[in-house]
Image (cartoon, rainbow over all chains, first blue to last red; front, side, top):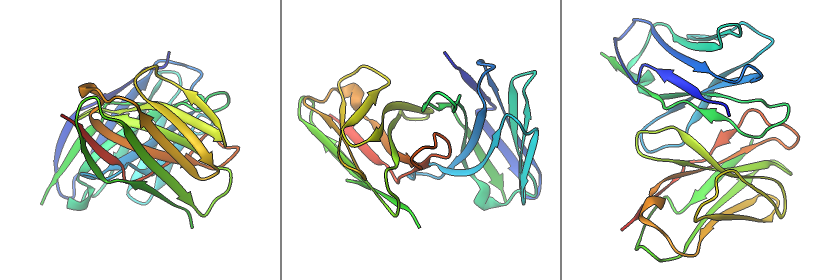
Length: 113
Length: 113
């Protein structure tokens, strides 16, 4: 079955710097890759997603890149702010035939003021 | 706009007691509904999903069951809780006919003692 590995498990950056979180997936048929942000005690919130027919997607300070050949995708946050501090999860799924998203283990991002 | 509710927010239950967690969605019809469990410091594991009233698919055989008595209501149950059932339970929904873009509720934190 699909397996998603996420790195690093923790990431500390200075406010204003960039943060990069990387995920690899095992099933080359996966075609949908969302990223979620989870604040303490709350449910995950979708922040950006990408489909396999696209290599990169941006939304203001957030961008996601996908390398289908290498089976990895990354989340890039530029000009980080303290409110970006949270746990970030990547996920992968074959949405043509399955309802199941496989999640990475999460990255705890700390943005130091 | 669509909103998703879960209750209770927190629950402490003794081993062997029954469980009932409820999730409701507003502002949409015929959504796909999902139950996930998140162990401490871990990613999300899909437990059940439903594409319609009375239609439940189980992803992980275990001590839990799910039911969908109404279009926008999803219930997670157990007859006898185990210590290992402790965790953060999240309900999610996606638009009917779409497997992508899952939106999560605020979650229920369950502690089994």
